[in-house]
Amino acid sequence: MTIPVTSFPKSEIKILLLENIHASAQEIFRGEGFAVESLPGAVKEAELIERIRDVHVLGIRSKTMVTARALAEARRLLAVGCFCIGTNQVALRAAGQAGTPVFNAPFSNTRSVAEMIIAEIVFLARQLGDRSREVHAGQWRKVAVGCHEVRGKTLGIIGYGHIGTQVAILAEAFGMRVLYYDIASKLPVGNVRAVPTLAELLGASDFVTLHVPETPQTKGMIGAEELAHMKQGGYLLNASRGTVVDIAALAAAVRSGHVAGAAVDVYPEEPEGKSDDFGSELRGLPNVILTPHIGGSTEEAQEAIGREVATSLVKLVNSGTTTGAVNFPQVELAVSPGAHRILNVHRNVPGVLRDINKLVSDLGANIRSQLLATDADVGYLVMDLDHDVSDEVKRGIAALETSIKTRILY
Image (cartoon, rainbow, N blue to C red; front, top):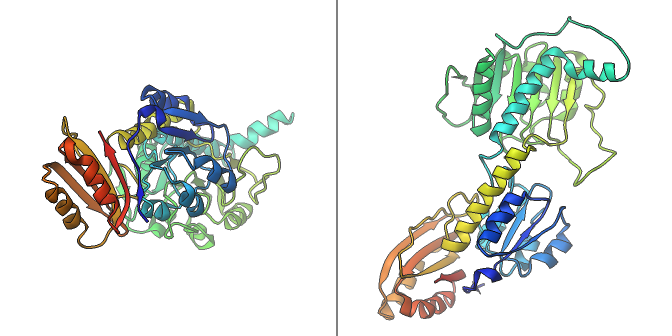
């Protein structure tokens, strides 16, 4: 189905931000002259459908589920911004097929998560969570048995991406030996060393920390068998995705003493908002740190995330740039002064570019610049034309059977 998206004044661009997205994002959008509405919490599918029918840009964090059904009702939606790292809360393929790129913030909370992991390593090594809880309860238990310095210990990092790299840098500053395992080849920083298998990393590490995305490969990647491969008395930390670790198996390993402690920030099922009845098999276990998905919850990270994602969304609205989109062809074309830019999303089938260029040629127009990128489902064309025929070309492109969305930037 062809869904033409026409040009309009910036003041008519409607931005809907959910889940207390940082004011830094609002400042950027309002600085562009866009109309911004901000809500403090997540919304259910029915309410989301009602709210986004006339919205051009939707901003969410991790709790709002953007389903295929909601996307089908969002007739004017140009983009979705996930003001976080994860994007599994969005029906990514449905969004791409509808011509809607989805952006996230892969860099901005890196330091915050890494610092928390290092703090938790020290906490686990010294059993500080238990000692603090005891003193709060009026108990004085001065203990040295089972407490260690982290200097000279081995940290194993599963997933050597942005966060994993930062964790490694900080860990080496503490005097730790650092190993990593990743399915992709990565250039190690400092004295960090790659190991060829997950089993080797688990068996060689005193502390194991996970920094992987949620994919079919990572779901359940740490279960009873993997925990058994860990060193006796090792520690496990997970601030990546809740589905990566089998919580029941981890709880059993802690109870048996094979795992001496754990720090968990993410869970297979999490409350949508504040809750007083969160349940987990890890609750109450000794030397287990449980936090409510706060790895990136610092003021610095949230401000940076707001700016990172909002900047990507503004570039999409103003110039059609999709660099950084997680579900969409990557296109960034320098603007030609005095030209009209046509943005077209179409089904990725043979002959589309031929048909579009014929339309332009038949109108006697001059193509100043043109860039096409595709994925399995869609093609995304950015084309700068002489201004006097852009409306006619747009109408002709939008009428093509293959067209999904067409927009002009004057």
